[in-house]
Image 1 (tube, rainbow, N blue to C red):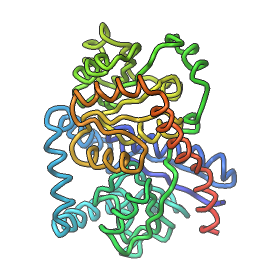
Image 2 (image 1 turned 90 degrees about the vertical axis):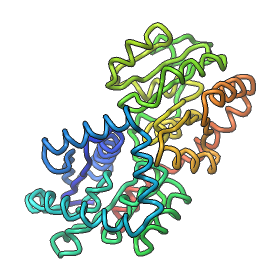
Image 3 (image 1 turned 180 degrees about the horizontal axis):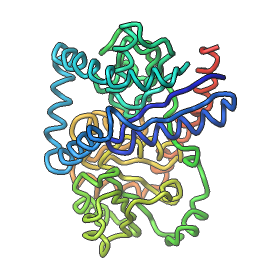
Image 4 (image 1 turned 90 degrees about the horizontal axis):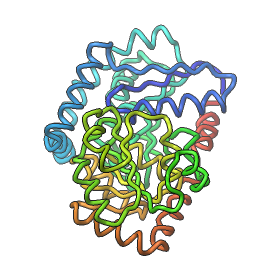
Length: 360
């Protein structure tokens, strides 16, 4: 693959950005003849800050509102199409100057509304580059799928079916998740030694995404009640949460050692889903979804469980019971890990090889 590649994402949560960075890094490795440029913005710094702040406030204070919005769009396709047209036009106009300056041969988007902007430009003959939308969640939000994008990459066959139901004209594929190369099966004991964690303790890694949402204090109590001997909590950018938990668990702030932590854990428990679930599956560490956030969080958790790749715990008592069961029955835990490894045997490198062939 040669030419100019533009990888677009938005700083709303960290999953979209992490996927874009992983894609850009893999492209530079696989396509040394390509010029890969990554841009993390929707429509300028001010709008990015407002979007990030509104998303954070909603997820921390009233996550049910986010779930209500998701359900509204899923259940009412006509309303979703209207919202998509408005958002696509705004993002398309915002993206136009960047695309004129870059003249890319390939544009890859990891943020749904950016993908809409690309589709809007394509419909008006203002974008000739091939376009790919990379979906970072198992559940496909209506804004993820656009008929005007050349390819849409989803995570599971059920995700593809959902996307095709939203946009029958879209070219939807099942692809490997876009995760950093460091997320791969490794030596659990060596990871624990490197991190200073107890070597023989039953260890659970708990996360609520980069914002640390999902009532993690109650989740930690439920995990402890299930018999976890070592609990490590990724508090992300939520410094208040880290302070509240530091006497009850190994509470970490923002860290770049997540690959080692996932490798070291017996289980990863998340209230957010999204990228951390894909990263855990890539390592081969079983995933539990604890009281997942409303909307795409709940939908994606259920779809992942249906594929045999995770366990959903809707209530705190379910968390406790599941932790206790998986602690007492390591063979069940290993079966989950084996399915995760099988799922992740198909890698992002293979996807990029296929994309390069299609481009040529």
